[in-house]
Amino acid sequence: MMFNRKYYCCYVAFLWGLIANLNQLYGQQLARSSDRQNYISDAEIRLQPTVKWKFQTKAQIFASPIVFKDKVIVGSCDSNLYALDKTSGKIIWKYKTGGEIRSTVAIDSNLLYFVCSDGLLYALSIETGERRWTFATQGEKKQDTWDYFHSSPTISDGIVYFGSGDKHIYAVDGKSGELHWKFPTGGIVHASPTLAKEGVMIGSFDGYFYCLEKNGKLRWKFKTIGERYFPKGEIQFHAVATDSTVYFGARDFNMYALNIKDGTGYWVYHQPGSWTSVPSLSGEKLIVTMSDSYSVLALDKINGTKLVEQAVPLNTFSSATIAGSNAFFGTLDGVIYRFDLAKGITTPIFQTESSKRNRHLFVDEQGKLRGDLQEKYAHDINGLFTDYLQMGSIFSTIWIADNTLYFGAADGAVYAIE
Image (tube, rainbow, N blue to C red; front, side):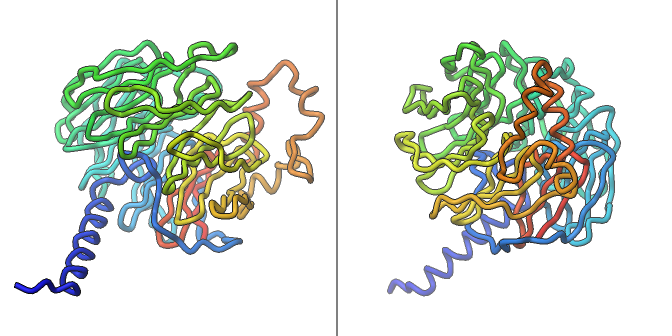
């Protein structure tokens, strides 16, 4: 039989299209996939996108929206989970819980899952918002002012994995809500699980990064170095996995790269004076958002060498969403930034309405923090970060679909911009 190259190429393209469609229908969650790479091949995003629609909830939004078919799904601190029309922003349905929703949903087939501050994991119908079941943990708890998120579930082979404020990591049956196993840690677990074939990987506020077998047994654990003011090296955010490596940041100012198989170290990158926030991947580059250094980094994923660092006015607590050669993220100043990965240049492209009104109270015309803030908030750092939220701070990891950016803001608004 003669090799028909044209037929082969068409067949391969068909298979990849089928896989992509299946992933779209059955695996949507924080950072798009269970390995948390947060990457799409490309998107045509205008340099100055405008509002397609805006939907107002009644409280702050820290969770990230997920786009599924014709719906945008996002939770709010007003205790509601919203399903909005992707085109118009109108409510399709909403579901009232018993607490704040700071968790991003994971979707598997016709069900969605999320964690709530009432201590429950919820499973709802994606079509109607009807509750199918709930699973009760031992209760939620907040670490401190900067503990903005709850763990966002991930799902694999019908099992939902998530962390809890009760210091445990859970695996629950996606259809019935029955407990498969739970694993104890020494601290609050608000990071979101990252999956690889080797297991379930997640960090805890106890400063350990855990790799668990799919049956809940410990495969290995890794202790962060720690730092003078954060000696535990608390792990707050999710990791990203690719090939043989898992990458994660911690409050000890370090970004870690470990061997997924056994937890041995590949490299450590140290960012003086700043928590490392959330990593994402673009080819050979690891894109890392930063907290107190007010910047975004591109690191060489093989050796951890810093390739470029670009300044932004304030902290970033979410993952940079990568579309081709650009990364998009929001910061506490209520502005969306585009990071050109080829040129190493960061450009502001959109500002929330609250930021337009209130950003001048915190950031001067040169994009630097106002000089009088230190005196005003000298003994009230918690109050400063609470007041920052007046700018419509963006904690959402942006979802990109059909050349549109979807995100929520601390002023309670959900935006679709294009």
